Image 1 (cartoon, one colour):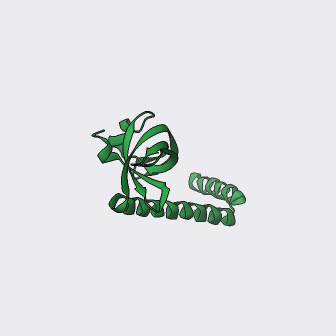
Image 2 (tube, rainbow, N blue to C red):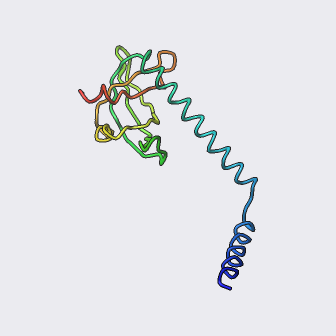
Image 3 (spheres, rainbow, N blue to C red):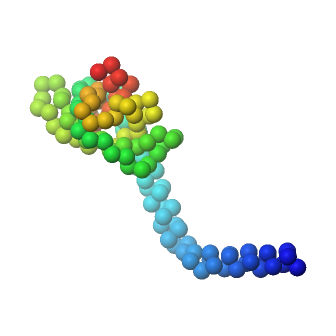
Length: 135
């Protein structure tokens, strides 16, 4: 008797869940997550390219905010910078970048960091956290 009651209760729970289930909304949410993942991968590819071919400069962190996203248990941060390129006037830029755990102490307002700048688009900046530890 107890087994059939448990099965009936389970069926009621399933019916309750199915009542609010919207496959279209689930698909839209999944597509949105895939879009965000693709954007993150594109940013990581761009960062890798900048690390190799970008122009070196220094920057000062103005503010740091967590985005809520994590990559391999590392937080993604929105970081506002003042960039000081050699021979050019400083300019502000906002970077969204993964900050690995060992470098979180450096990701605070007022800190100086080493950056790489895309020569063709100065608004595209990558923070070199490892290179920043010596500053």
